[in-house]
Structure formats: structure tokens, C-alpha cells
Amino acid sequence: MKLSFLSASAMACLLGFSAIGQKGGPEVKNLKNINPNAIKATMTFLADDLVEGRQPGTRGFSVASKFVETQMMRIGLKPAMPDGGYLQPVPLKKGIVSEKLTTMTLGEETLTYGQEFIASPYMPQSESSVSAPLVFVGYGISAPEMQYDDYKGIDVKGKIVVFFNAAPESFPSNQRAYFTTNPVKYNEAIKRGAVGVIAVNFPNDKRSTWEATVRRTKQGTFKWLNKEGQPNDAFPALKAVATFNPDKAEKLFAKSGKTFASAVESTKASKAESFDLNIQATIKVNTQFTSVAGSNLVGIIEGSDPKLKDEYIVYTAHLDHFGIGAPVKGDSIYNGAHDNASGVAILLEIAQTFKNLPEAPKRSIVFTIVTGEEFGLLGSDYFASNSPLNGKIVADLAIDMPFFFHPVLDIVPYGAQHSSLNQQVEKTAKILGLGISSDPFPEQVVFIRSDHFSFIKKGIPALFIKSGFKTVPSDTIDRSKSDVGWRSTIYHTPQDDMSQPFDFDAAATHVKVNYLIGYYVAQDSKSPDWNVGDFFGGKFGKK
Image (tube, rainbow, N blue to C red; front, side):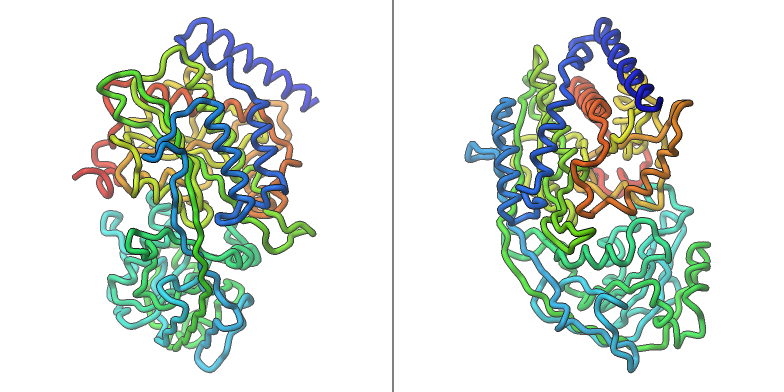
């Protein structure tokens, strides 16, 4: 019965769009040209074992990139690079921790790598070490604008700070996400004179298990290199960055007179007091490096307005995934079907939909397929920092595993509440008959976890749209629970392949949503702007 209903529901949506198309302008009538099978075909190739999980610097990534490049040619996108091509080189440095040569002692006890702790590569050089007292600093956040400061009354100069890998629940969702990011926490620690950090997840953190965190670390770390050949965001002042297993974290508090459980409780209640842990740690990190010739792909549809064509709306999707890694259930190829072959496929169909218009939009539309998202939003950050465009980027829309395991009845437009882009979101949702929902999982800090955030840091309004979890009366599944279940069982594992029950009509809905929003931004006489008094506009926008 459920399958029958969903089929009828999909048919009703198609009939609804057909009726809208008869009444709407050319941009709405154009919706009928969107092809769900094209999305499926692109995903099928990009998620095949043939491309070996698409890790940057591998043959598989190169094959996948060449395939996407040929699709840009087929669609008729104009190459964006000065040399007349689509390929933007992204020089990368890859670091992998040598587990046997990386050690940590806590007091007199020698800890076991992978069981009690793991370390991040020290990107400035192959060997680094630090020996210093430990200090607990709650979330490791100082946010005067939120009337919050974990560092109040504590001296961390020359010490290693220990903090929870999260942010206060009292913060608004996207501000909470921002203060969870490593660069924000690392820079605050450095500003206070810390020489190392140890991060700990809360017990039962649903974002990732300890086992998944260890597997992920084995893939290494990438940084893009500046013109001087130095790694960007390397934080050389922090001589060691470690992550501690929360199941073993009581050891960090053994000499403090307080328990790990009490620290969890008080921190979650935003009542944490920073204090010395009365124990010394010595951490030695050995890192093995390789140079990687990374790359983005950039294509353009030039705007039709003589004045506005030098303003750009950028669509972004990441091509990379984790390649071949630790086996899970007998499979070692991390195919990344949903994450993010789906986003690349949807972006290409958005590009085709724009090309199907009888006239190009007033502003230019840019399509960027980026590398290194899984390793820190590297390709999008490089593009935003080294744009090849001769003009101004006014907005970004990122497409990254938007969720289409069921019909899309509502959307969660991350970022819409911060800028005038909300106007185009609301107009699009009304046309398509979709609801607009708020962030259902603020604890997952989705807002900072995809490529749109690279543009926000440059002061550019951006959106990241996922499906919501509205249901119909015949539904027997709580979609919010199934989403969490997917993240805890399939996400970032080899099981994210094409055997999953994707709904490609729903994928086509994501094309419609992102295409229409971008079109209406491109046609607006005013470029997008931050809302007055907005947190991100104030932090990153023009003062």
C-alpha cells in the first residue's frame, strides 16, 4: 500500500507542476524538462567501484573528474579558467599520522593509539611534540556576543586545553554550529597561549561513533597550499591536536577531584567551570606527507544583462569521498553515492535546466564541482579564496546529500534566516507547494558542514538546502528517526552505494528548488544582502 501511495503521490506532484507550468513564466514552464533518470545515470557512474571512492589525488578521482568535465562540455557550459579550460588546480598536502610513532602519556601511564586517543597530523612538519599540564575549558568557547566565556578566570598559557567537541544548546542553531568548528576553537586556544588541544565528544554523540572517528582519521588530513607553498589553516602554534575516546575520558579527570560525568552534566547545562586537571600529558606526533594535485571544475552560463552579468550566483557540489579504506561488512570502497555523487548529479541537472531556458538569466550562473570537502571544505575554500571569476560572487547554493529517500514535502533551507535569500526561498516553496521547516537536528551542526560555509566566511550569503521530514497519513516511518539511523549506520561507510532506496523523483524536486531559487536571485535587481544585525553578516560581511 505504501509503495502504491507514493507512486500516486509522485504522480500528483508531477500533475501539480504541470498545472503550475501552464500558468507560470518560462522559468516555471522549464521544470517539465528536468529528468530524474539523468540524475540516476550520473550517480550510478560516480558511485561505481570503478572510481574507487573518489579520494583526492587518486586515479578514481581523476576518472570521476574527467567524466564530470565531459558532462559540462555536453551541457554547453563555458569554461571559467583563464587557460580556456574547466580545471582549477588545487595544490594539496596530505598528512597521515604514523600510528606506531605517535604516542601519548598521561601522568605515568602510556596510552594506546586508536583505543584511548588519536592525533591529527601536524601539517607544518613531520615531527612535533609537547609536554604540558592539562586544563579543562568546557566547550573551549569565548563568545562575548552570546554572553558566554569558558576561559573566564583561567590561565591556559603554555598548557594543553581539554574541551568538548560541541557548543551550548542555548545558542541559536547556526551560531551553535559556528562555535563548534575547529578553527574557531583552535584560534581561541592559540590566542590564550595554549600549546595543544584535546577534544572529547559527549558520550553517545550521534554525529559519529568512536570507531567511525578512528576509521576516518586513517584517511589522513589534507590542506590546500598558498602561493608560498604553506598549508592553509595549519595552526602551527598547537604542537599537538588529539581526540580522546569518551569511554576512556575519566582518565583525564582522575587527578582533578571531579569526574568526567560531572563535567558532561555541568557543561551541557552551560554551568561548566574551567579548572586545572592536575595532570601532565606528553604527546608526540609523527606525520608522513605526500603532495596531491587536487582540482576543481568550474563552468559558467553567462548572464544576459550587460550590467548584471559580472555578478555571479555560484552552485557548488563536492566530488570527493573517502576512497578505499578500512573494510566495513567486507567492503572497503567508500562509494559515496548519497555523499556526494547525488549532489554532483543534481548540480549537473540544474545546469542543464538553466541551459534549457529560452534566454539566460540576467546574472551569470557558475557551477563548481569541488574537491576535498570531506577533508575540511578545501576545494570550495580554495575557490572562494582564489576565484577565477572577473566579477563579484553574490550568492552560493551548495548541494550535498540533500536526502531523497522519500517524496520531498518540505525543505530545511540552512542559511535562509540570515539574508535576503529567504525571499527567493519562500517564493520557490510557494510555487512548488513545499513547506519550510527549521533545523530538526541542531546538535548535528549541519550549517557548517558543507561547502556553502566557505562562502559565508568570505561574507557571501549562501544556502544549503535539505529535505524536511513532513509525512502523509499513510506513512509508517518517522523520517527524522530514519535520517538519524542512516547517519549512524550508512553515512561515511562503504554501504553508501547505489543499492539504497533512492527516490529520483524526489531528487528532481531538489533540482527544481535550487534552480528556481538561483533563477530568482539572478533576476532580482538587487543583489542578496545580510539581514540587519545578523550574526554572520556582522562577523564576515562588509562592516
